Length: 221
Ligand code: IYR
Image (cartoon, rainbow, N blue to C red; front, side, top):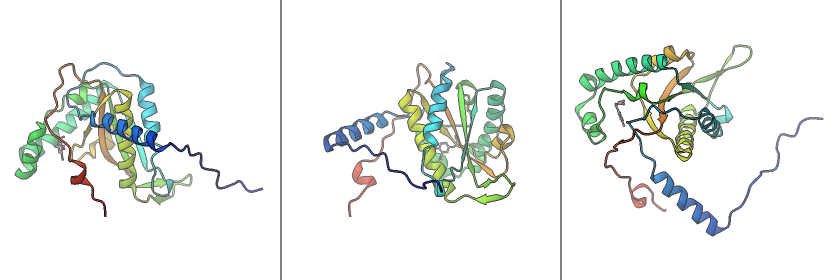
């Protein structure tokens, strides 16, 4: 007998009041998330990272191809190599490659070429996008909508870490091909971003920036 291809959806309906309360408290909690650039070196529980990655892995993806791979980096020597390579790229960016307009846009964030958090934070998560999937026979199959899929998974990862009580920084040294070499990832994987996570430093400061209001980001037709 052939295996059933579909099974009943396990959907739990909430009443309207519950929906409103849940969506509001989720929004208020997400509003507290801040991108942090000053981390403590305190260790964090590995199980939290594993659960957050499992949550990210539930993301919808084109044809359910799950075109992502996460490398969890805790080894100080690997972190040192990543910092060295990232700062080299960033120096070129800040001291020449970046157009004036871009540097001006970054001013409110107070970023520069120094990335000490890459060594201080207890955990870096290298997020890789798989352009294709190699099957058991070694044949490559194109993945569909990998950028959208990995973007969604990364959003869930950031949310999961925030809800678990950790701070994150989405870091995009550019170019970041060096991550393939340092982390031993194959050529069919493109580094998507580096997510730094841990507890914030005791006196961590964040820039005074704000988010757009509802009518600035949404419209009803
Ligand atoms: N990758 C650089 C520059 C940078 C670019 C953007 I867009 C940012 O939102 C923040 C930083 C850096 O990490 O400093």
